Length: 118
Image (cartoon, rainbow, N blue to C red; front, side, top):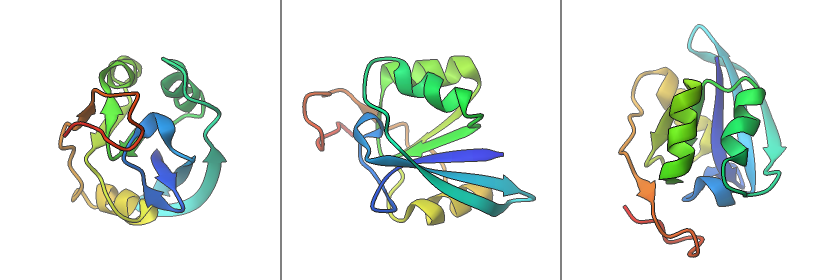
Protein backbone atom coordinates (compact mmCIF):
# COMPACT_ATOMS: atom_id res chain seq x y z
CA UNK A 1 0.00 0.00 0.00
CA UNK A 2 1.22 3.49 -0.82
CA UNK A 3 0.05 6.47 1.24
CA UNK A 4 0.64 10.09 0.19
CA UNK A 5 0.39 12.91 2.71
CA UNK A 6 0.22 16.53 1.49
CA UNK A 7 2.89 18.07 3.69
CA UNK A 8 5.14 20.98 4.54
CA UNK A 9 8.11 20.55 6.87
CA UNK A 10 6.90 16.99 7.60
CA UNK A 11 3.52 18.29 8.85
CA UNK A 12 0.12 17.74 7.21
CA UNK A 13 -0.77 20.85 5.21
CA UNK A 14 -4.15 22.60 5.21
CA UNK A 15 -4.61 22.61 1.44
CA UNK A 16 -3.68 19.65 -0.74
CA UNK A 17 -2.89 21.56 -3.95
CA UNK A 18 -0.63 24.14 -2.33
CA UNK A 19 1.51 21.77 -0.28
CA UNK A 20 5.29 22.04 -0.42
CA UNK A 21 5.72 18.29 -0.97
CA UNK A 22 4.14 14.89 -0.66
CA UNK A 23 5.36 12.51 2.01
CA UNK A 24 5.03 9.08 0.41
CA UNK A 25 4.90 6.07 2.71
CA UNK A 26 5.07 2.46 1.53
CA UNK A 27 3.37 0.12 3.99
CA UNK A 28 3.16 -3.64 4.39
CA UNK A 29 1.28 -5.45 7.15
CA UNK A 30 0.14 -2.07 8.53
CA UNK A 31 3.77 -0.97 9.07
CA UNK A 32 5.62 1.77 7.20
CA UNK A 33 8.61 0.18 5.48
CA UNK A 34 9.79 3.08 3.31
CA UNK A 35 9.30 6.84 3.09
CA UNK A 36 10.27 9.49 0.58
CA UNK A 37 9.50 13.14 -0.05
CA UNK A 38 8.41 14.28 -3.50
CA UNK A 39 8.30 18.05 -4.20
CA UNK A 40 4.91 19.30 -5.37
CA UNK A 41 5.30 19.54 -9.17
CA UNK A 42 2.77 22.39 -9.34
CA UNK A 43 -0.89 23.11 -8.71
CA UNK A 44 -3.08 23.03 -11.81
CA UNK A 45 -6.60 21.65 -12.05
CA UNK A 46 -6.71 17.88 -12.33
CA UNK A 47 -2.95 17.35 -12.50
CA UNK A 48 -2.00 16.25 -8.97
CA UNK A 49 -4.55 13.43 -8.59
CA UNK A 50 -3.32 11.92 -11.87
CA UNK A 51 0.34 12.48 -10.88
CA UNK A 52 -0.18 10.62 -7.59
CA UNK A 53 -2.20 7.89 -9.31
CA UNK A 54 0.69 7.35 -11.73
CA UNK A 55 2.98 6.93 -8.71
CA UNK A 56 0.76 4.09 -7.47
CA UNK A 57 -0.74 5.93 -4.49
CA UNK A 58 -3.69 4.15 -2.82
CA UNK A 59 -4.55 6.77 -0.16
CA UNK A 60 -4.16 10.57 -0.01
CA UNK A 61 -4.19 12.39 3.34
CA UNK A 62 -4.54 16.17 3.64
CA UNK A 63 -6.00 18.89 5.82
CA UNK A 64 -8.38 20.01 3.08
CA UNK A 65 -8.93 19.46 -0.61
CA UNK A 66 -11.02 20.88 -3.44
CA UNK A 67 -14.05 18.99 -4.67
CA UNK A 68 -12.61 18.54 -8.17
CA UNK A 69 -9.53 16.75 -6.84
CA UNK A 70 -11.68 14.55 -4.59
CA UNK A 71 -13.80 13.54 -7.61
CA UNK A 72 -10.72 12.55 -9.63
CA UNK A 73 -9.27 10.56 -6.73
CA UNK A 74 -12.62 8.79 -6.32
CA UNK A 75 -12.69 7.96 -10.05
CA UNK A 76 -9.19 6.46 -9.73
CA UNK A 77 -10.17 4.39 -6.69
CA UNK A 78 -7.84 6.33 -4.37
CA UNK A 79 -9.13 6.80 -0.83
CA UNK A 80 -9.29 10.45 0.28
CA UNK A 81 -8.77 11.41 3.93
CA UNK A 82 -9.28 15.10 4.74
CA UNK A 83 -9.27 16.94 8.03
CA UNK A 84 -5.92 15.48 9.11
CA UNK A 85 -3.48 17.50 11.23
CA UNK A 86 -0.04 17.10 12.79
CA UNK A 87 2.99 15.10 11.72
CA UNK A 88 2.70 13.48 8.28
CA UNK A 89 4.21 10.14 9.31
CA UNK A 90 2.02 10.01 12.44
CA UNK A 91 -1.07 10.63 10.25
CA UNK A 92 -0.07 7.74 7.96
CA UNK A 93 0.50 5.49 10.99
CA UNK A 94 -2.91 6.44 12.45
CA UNK A 95 -4.49 5.59 9.08
CA UNK A 96 -2.79 2.18 9.09
CA UNK A 97 -4.13 1.56 12.61
CA UNK A 98 -7.66 2.43 11.45
CA UNK A 99 -7.71 5.49 13.72
CA UNK A 100 -7.72 8.24 11.08
CA UNK A 101 -11.07 8.98 9.44
CA UNK A 102 -11.93 11.64 6.91
CA UNK A 103 -13.88 14.67 8.12
CA UNK A 104 -14.97 15.42 4.55
CA UNK A 105 -13.30 18.86 4.71
CA UNK A 106 -13.62 20.43 1.25
CA UNK A 107 -11.82 23.62 0.27
CA UNK A 108 -13.99 26.07 -1.63
CA UNK A 109 -11.77 29.16 -1.72
CA UNK A 110 -8.77 28.36 -3.91
CA UNK A 111 -7.52 31.94 -4.00
CA UNK A 112 -6.88 31.87 -0.23
CA UNK A 113 -3.96 29.50 0.20
CA UNK A 114 -4.32 28.93 3.94
CA UNK A 115 -8.04 29.53 4.47
CA UNK A 116 -9.93 26.39 3.49
CA UNK A 117 -13.59 26.24 4.39
CA UNK A 118 -14.28 23.57 7.00
